Length: 403
Image (cartoon, rainbow, N blue to C red; front, side):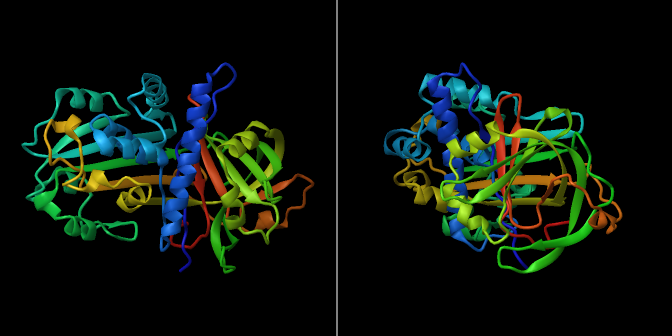
């Protein structure tokens, strides 16, 4: 079984004219930080069906900055490159998160963060207030000394579920498990939507060439529509095609980046992706009528962020002897025992149900340009009202992930 590595990223894009330098700097910073997160996860290897959202990963870290002090706070600020203690940064982030979660007819985008706290742990009123105001975040009590009875486990975050390279239970037990846990952070992201222009019902099994060269048959959707399209070149000279497909109600649009040369691996393009390059590409798209072929898939995943944060220099946060989170409880000995992240995305003809297949589309001859995502590609979800962009990256594919 070939693996599918998909990164679901929630990114703010540069604001249109009139935005301050601070806003532009922060959007570029967080976009580059999101790309760094993807590369960190990808470098760990052995990942299948991986979906991640940088926004979902960053919100808990931003929240912890309200309670972190001393070296713990400095490590968090250095890893993120910004601090919520800066009033201008805090105001900008609150504006970006204000529309999440959002629900429109045919579309749903949810992002939330829950901090599970050991029952009986004192909490600073100021911290509780800050949590309640931050990006659909909440505090919930949990009895980690009786893990089978905690709300965290009841909501599907049990220690036996897989998270990244190892079961959550392994990290739970290695860190002292139920007896030593004080605080568990769980962030979730979910996106589902119908297209503004639905794909044809003639979905069919077509070849998809994986990164390893293996060819599989996958359910391939089809439509002919007016789209935004452009052809660009990365700093290394690799040619790519970029296509944008809108979702119903303009809640989001899907941007796809596909190497023009079938022999160019996506891995050759990934290292050159930057916030500035992505913004330049999406800002230069032109309207065009095209035939579009796109695989249908639904993927969800959750994983442990601890190893990644360790590699970013966030070390004290998880150490019961060194963590300084006095802003949360006013006491020593408070630390983060787990950092778990979950994300989900679904892409289909209507956002719901597939239909019968036919090979007739392969026989059509037309002078209309074709965009055929039949090999590894990158895609982005863009939320137009706030300029939030949610990029995703497909490196390979397998029949388990495509339905």
